[in-house]
Length: 103
View 1 (spheres, helix red, strand yellow):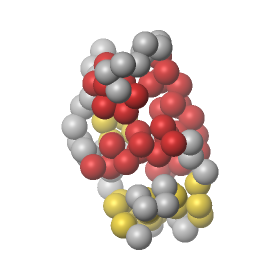
View 2: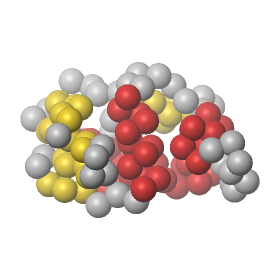
View 3: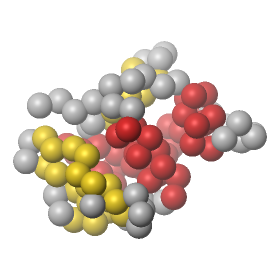
View 4: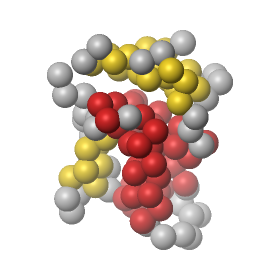
């Protein structure tokens, strides 16, 4: 297991070999893209990424869908992670998103 975030007595663990995520020792069921998005944020903590950058890095340059798919995936990911852990994904108006642990 790889412990990636500890804050407010919440431990989020992401296990890359099995694509499992745990929040407060409870397994969270994520889709493949949600998992990839969370893993990307965790490995790039504090960096701001636009929707276009996230689409290119998570969905690939060949993706022809709507850029709002990022918003939809982030909304679902926040919900699944819960109030505290989901709050680590920060929206920056007109800029994009970043992952930031606030202690």
